[in-house]
Image 1 (cartoon, rainbow over the protein chains, first blue to last red):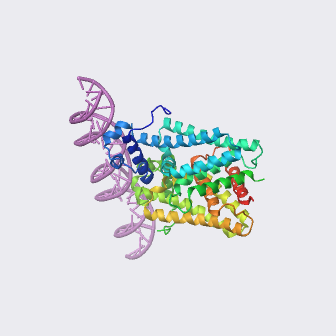
Image 2: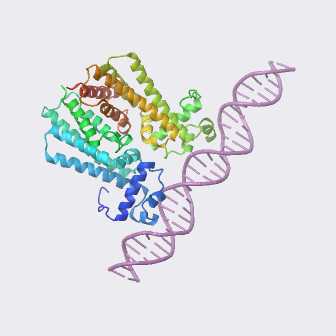
Image 3: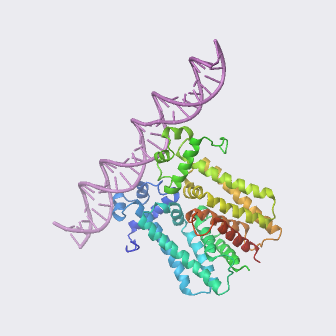
Length: 198
Length: 198
DNA sequence: TGCCAGAAACCGACCGGTCGGTATGTCACT
DNA sequence: AGTGACATACCGACCGGTCGGTTTCTGGCA
């Protein structure tokens, strides 16, 4: 259920998925007929239903690729074993950059997450929770080591930080006034400032 | 277009609106047939279309009541003329409390905001922007008066703070472990800590 | 007060259109 | 001749909105 499937590699599958991603982000899941996905990907309905079980299956694939990437980024930083301050900063900056770069996936994710069936929803929630807990763990470690203040509960800090990230799809534009890297640095510094305040 | 309509006061209208709100929050806008709104409100389809122009009109009414309340809260605090620190704190705390109390409206708002037609979208965006700008103005005032640090741009602080609030519908539960008032205080203090850090 | 006419407040069967999904066929390649 | 990879025509369920009709309210007038 979780992952068993081999990586989607057929070019047809990739075309379908990227067309679906773009259209779902632009017009919403319910506002996008399967027929229009098919046309945008320049395939036929038969081809789509040959590779995917259902329209919902397209959604799940989109979610999965997003979350898998986020978890991989997080694990890589944690494995690097940086001190808490640098670890938190790196995770946040990378998360914001990655979200900016894949803003369509993030948009679809936040807008349509309620459409998953129970099994898929459970899998997605478990992955998100794992991210949340690992991030919080980094903050808790910093508190134990005395580099972060204990004024605000770690959970609340995570809620604020991830809240900003998950809200990005509603306002972020790649051609906006501020480059993502600059934004990421500002947000990370602001969060660290709150974390380090006496 | 903006507001002209007298306040909805007929009990039938209120029943329809509150049934729609509950169902939209629970199953999503597209997942809720007009027929089921009608049944939940114990009226007929004729009655619904007598009072409302369309299914989308229900959405707009929900949005409007949410934003109108937020702006009224904000204006009240600004009118009180508190010093920046207290003003920012009060606005944030009230916004979080209000969002927690009307979490269904917030949920529908964030999830289905793309469904509005151009005119309604424009009106809603203008109101949201007004909130955003006014909030940012409070922070800028604090910077001018020297009580807030200028390390992080005011705009970025607003993005973080409102990001947390707008993300609440995806995780907040009234029966959760932490009372909304406590959460609000923690978040406000955390943001202020970042704002006041040297 | 009694009555009536028009307006407002509904009622609910029905329609036109859309959409996800399927059934069946074809064809290249092994 | 069997199999995977499509192609295409089509189905049936569903849904938003309409529309002709009915009931209820309201106010003016004798």
